Amino acid sequence: MFSMMNGLQHYGQQALRAARYIGQSFMVTLEHMNRLPITVQYPYEKIIPSERFRGRIHFEFDKCIACEVCVRVCPINLPVVDWELIKSMRKKQLKSYSIDFGVCIFCGNCVEYCPTNCLSMTEEYELATYDRHELNYDQIALSRLPFSIVQDSTIQAHSSLGYLS
View 1 (cartoon, rainbow, N blue to C red):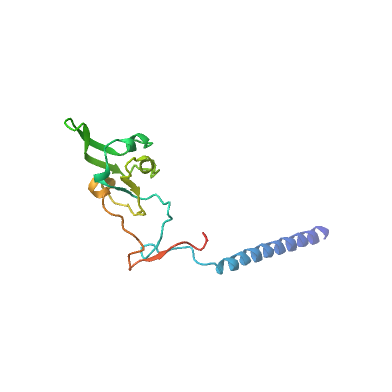
View 2 (view 1 turned 135 degrees about the vertical axis):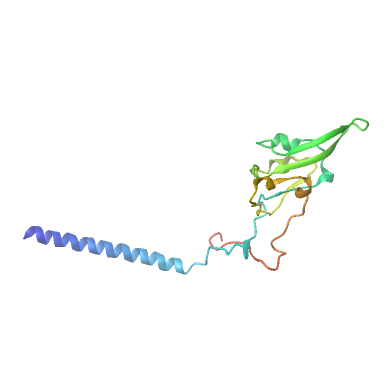
């Protein structure tokens, strides 16, 4: 008889503990219902990147002096600089410049150490393709001006998310 009473008491304690845990979890759920949504409806809404965001690299062909500093400071020796030496002027002439964004780690060293500031980071982050060879940008693709999210009237731009502020 005593063991049966002890078992009922233990069962009652467990039921109360379970009810308390359920109540606590329900309170957490109610607290989260008052928050702003975190999810962004991506193709129609986009987040404006911060000022220091490191996106696609923009290249200005006319400013480049083919010094190859960008190649030397790159941790993976990524930029491919093709140049020819003009002996009469004792000067390098840039023939082609390319970066493979499928391999690039977007560290920004090339932009930081470029002596002529012909490289700059943009806000572009939509570089996805179905073929990885399309991520190899030559000087023409790199010199394309960056597209600004703010100027597109079909997209609602968010400057920040609720949980970040």
